[in-house]
Image (tube, rainbow, N blue to C red; front, side, top):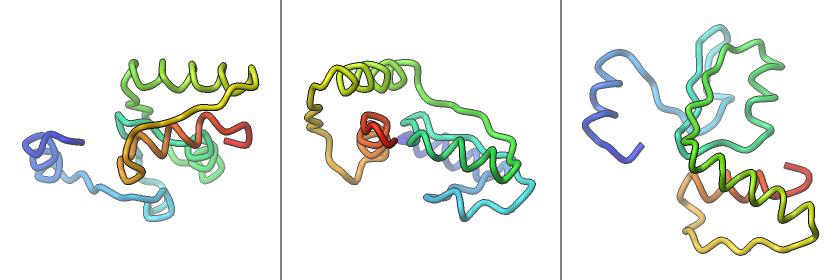
Length: 99
């Protein structure tokens, strides 16, 4: 999240922010970032029996679907986002066929 006020408020309410699903203890609900996550992340959460909410922004989801369609059509995707930005890694992972 980019909004420091929202992050701080969620932390006050007990939310814990992690980078990897492996950091989430068993039995704890998970909310996926508005930036989206690679397809393997919800699958891994399901395998672990974690309840999750996919809070991916609808516009981000639209970009993911478009990237998947273009990749399936044999086209290459060029991302101009910085690789350290969570949404760019989600875009990349979702547009890969193995994603």
